[in-house]
Length: 412
Image 1 (cartoon, rainbow, N blue to C red):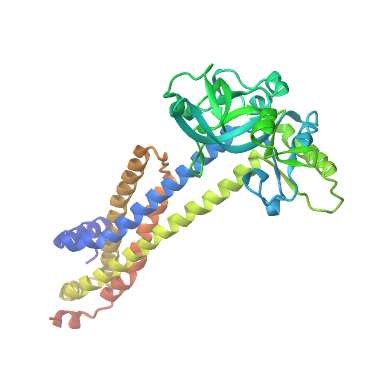
Image 2: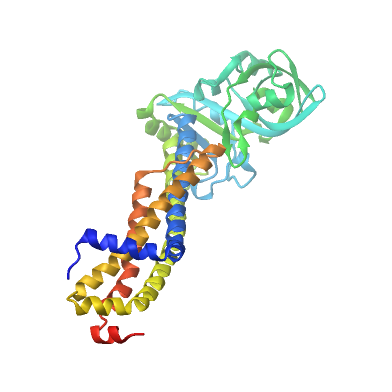
């Protein structure tokens, strides 16, 4: 008495439907496990895509020079730890190097802001006109900081979209005043909305002023007679010029810092490709880690399946003996119970995929992050759920198949 595959599946479904509540509770572990895998992998993939998009949006030709070695990385603008601060005078000497199109040193400080009765605080960045070349297409309206502004230490400011909302109630601030640390500035331009920069930092809350004005009125940090800057951003001529530009900048900075042959750099020069590669690697590892944690619940669900199938074998001992008495072989009984466990886990897997997809859709609907449900994550979760059912079903199925007909028929 041999059953083909379709008959085994129908028999398995009948057995599962005979105990609907027990089957549903047994599948619950698989449903939760698969749903968690799909949802967490989609969130991780979405986060990786969002971060990658933000970094790429900053500019593919961007090169950044930080104070501090790569092994002791602490930008001077981030609060101490730098080996040798970068200076404005050093940054000016990077202009004209091979592959360098524009150089934009920056000095940053957090300052109180005020317009009429409204107050706030924000990151104020002193910049040069070339900042607009390093980060093009950022102006919404008005103008950016000009060469005349830098030469004259003009008290002018370019504000982000969030500043417009917070201090000006959404009205156009161009031509109006703003007080930065109690000093009166005139707003000459508004930057387009840039969104979050990560870690709770919003690029829309930045105020830009001429770097010379920042040195004179907002930040007076010096190394001897030279004025220190937070970072120096450099725009390469094109993507092919990035590596030559990095080599030229590194050589020039080593000369300016009097670093001997074999000595470690006290600065770091990195491109967007370096940052993107590092971030992609970290987020990729995090996504796999999240998926692995969710996969643990699949194993727990598999143990539940094995437990219930062992109970089922005990309950159906007489049925097994009867089938063997009328000609069923050991392999027929084995395949029947394996089909039941795999059917149970596959059904749980399908429901779990729908649940995970639904969770991912809800997360996207909140606007916090755009999740990405990939075919690979669905296939991985579904395949793993089927494999769990097969693995944990082998022992109960083998136990059922090994029962002797006479002893099985005598079982009460």
